[in-house]
Image 1 (cartoon, rainbow, N blue to C red):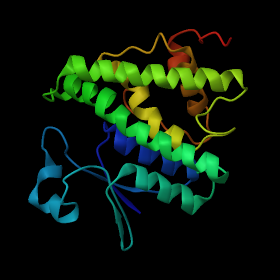
Image 2 (image 1 turned 180 degrees about the vertical axis):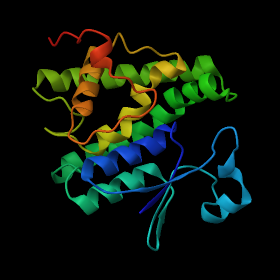
Image 3 (image 1 turned 90 degrees about the horizontal axis):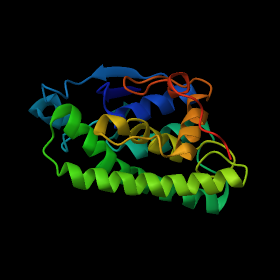
Image 4 (image 1 turned 90 degrees about the vertical axis):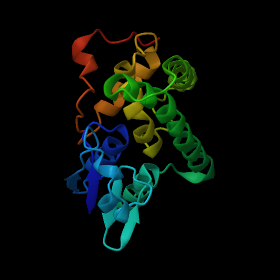
Length: 213
């Protein structure tokens, strides 16, 4: 299974993380996203006409959307999709939410790190709105004795949302005011076979744990 990858991409990282968690080996093919813009080259567009990353190839199967890759990896491994119709629908809702995170917190990070031309105030405001929504949901879940987004255990919903949230400070959006989010991130970091990404620091080693109330 080949993943065309950029190490600092949140979308690529969520696929690498999902593969690690389910024990799937990936052959990583580095793409010079910045500054080389190799993903926009003619040769890369022969593989993916959209010119986007990541791209996953498994035999004759080619996937160009990271959420589809998460579904594929989870389905192959079994689990991670939520049990029952209600949980499955909720997982799909959070996959859509993860796209909002990419369009807000993700774009703010691209602006600050790679100088992408965006309305930085607007994308930061949208990112804060997303964080407030996520914090509210996770707080209610915590009061009900749960820590993850859907049901009692981790699903692809958590993996889809985690990278852009954890990397929000790279785009000028702090996470200090969101204790439930920080506890959720700790829970994800504690999963067996969790792997690191540059920029996602060991928050539990850098600052005191948020108080669980």
